Length: 101
Image 1 (cartoon, one colour):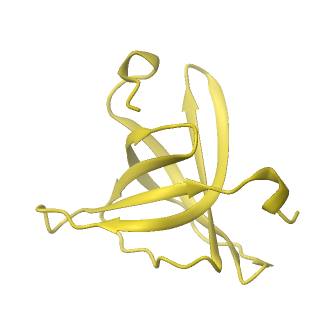
Image 2: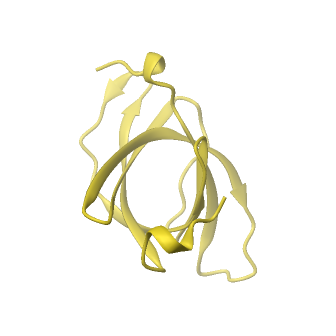
């Protein structure tokens, strides 16, 4: 579900690797463009390539109307793009009970 009235298009966020095989990682952040989102997942575009693995947990941080969101999840699909400079990914949120802090 795309909700263009709630934020300015385009919507950008910062993505970093949070955990790999249950080990916390201090990785750098990169900007990604959020294309659409729902209550369970979002679609984002990046000029970087990311692995698709359930052992890698990513964190996405974004602001919408001065509200900060920190989302944890997995890349569950890599969508081929006609534009070879960008890759498009589906990112599925982790449930709170899955998180190990």
